[in-house]
Image (cartoon, rainbow, N blue to C red; front, side, top):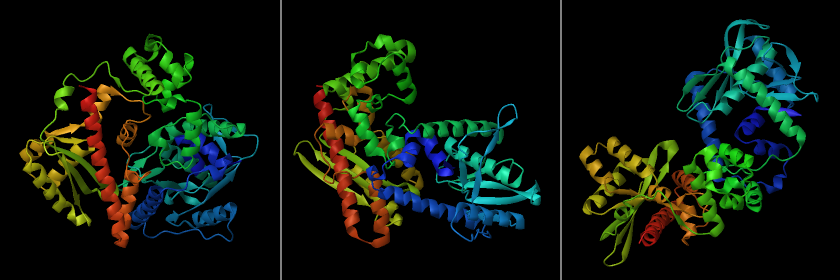
Length: 492
């Protein structure tokens, strides 16, 4: 059995993903999405930036062959030489020994597993090791902006392997996240967690039985096993398909015998109230009931002023943004203007063909919304409000003007989540609008794909990428309009 840093990272994110990556039928995996490929390229760029900024003079092991043991030997040879920085080193061991809480040493497994780690960097520091009066500590470089538990587990794994190889444990592995932020990992806290994770991971893999499926859209969205797992969840009427059912709530529901969407719809909320609170229990039961009956339900605690919020105006604006997070760029501000008197809809695509055009499209957007000062601006997330604040500050728009624009914003996502229960698995705009009968012209496209298209536009100059983005953004605006019209009828 081979335990790698990649396997541990996958396991901390999802046990099932780690299992399938070892035992699964790879013909059932989804093709790699363009966005995942883009993230991989951004990761390489981030690593290169860290090297250039902090360790421009590094050594890379050159192995006699391609085996892990040969690469590990080449890495150890550089450590013996005492080079200051090793890039892409290999740490490879068998029979890893980890001290338990009583400081004894014991084998974790009977099958003599192997352990493979490839830290981004190994940095020389003063100290004592088998090499002499120096030792090394590992550095892990990630695209994330916060030190997630899975990053710390992998960094601790590197430290433990390195400690055995050099016969001294490095005191603090380092994480380097964006933008070049350094974090130390407390080994006193994380070594016991590493041991538990290793034991659990090997136990799961040794069973050779797929862990139970649990769909978490944010966590699962980029996983190549998503369609495979989702099909199983649908066939089982799995509770993770019910919005609001978190892993902890799922466990509580299992304990009281609720194991499917139908059983959740049938249960009395009072029976769940003792373990998760009556309000949450009622919401989950009604959500399941909505899914089973395939109908929208008005929430018990509906916004009192919902009719006022959704009132019809002569001119209404429907607003959606396309952004490139890596560049901190909002490159498309799309607005559909609806004239309720003439029933005419006009789409305005304020598009930055280059990142430098962001200031121009911001002024164009302000000119349009200030032309219709009484028009409500409907949107579907908090992102639009935060973007208006960011662009206003960046381009020195008078605060009163920004406040005036934001005061007209109406967040339909907030309206929905506080007033209506939909028979959907996700309260995204696409999920809601699709249930209401609205269809995007390009099926299967997401905001992530638009990010990739914009990147390809900048690299190739092919306007078909821009045309696809604009079409998708217009459909987002029209979907927001469709949702608003439906809500207006629903709350008559």
